[in-house]
Image 1 (cartoon, one colour):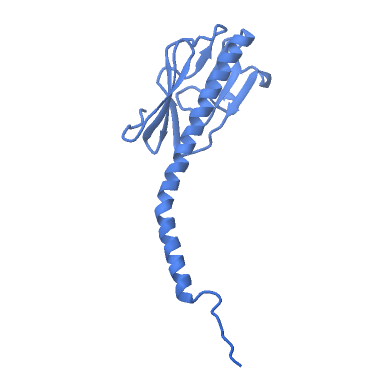
Image 2 (cartoon, helix red, strand yellow):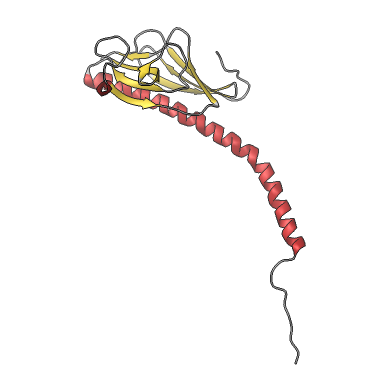
Length: 175
């Protein structure tokens, strides 16, 4: 009787070679993945800011009321230019730059990413949209930075229009 045996499976050396190659590929891909995730965080924050600015402007015109977007903590506007902790959109019927009750709050955002720094230009802590859709005051620039590098800016002009400027490498974050 002549039986032939065929090898089924892998040897230990073949398995070790596959694991080494897999480790090399993962080592090359990991830094790129971190950069990809960082840029996605920036894009998401810029989109949220732009969307909330557009929402406030649209509601100001459609409701014929003053709408405010401001950096917030615990359901209240905070003084200063730090937007990293979050922001909110609300109706400001009495002009005191604070919501009087929860019914006036339209939206609250909390980015929640410690690696992002979101700051507005000094002297402009909040954005007020008048019933005409114009932005009261001077231009507002909100800088979105990651690891000390400026990645994007959301700029709102006096007419109330928001635009996004994206930045590449080499731009330090303005404080």
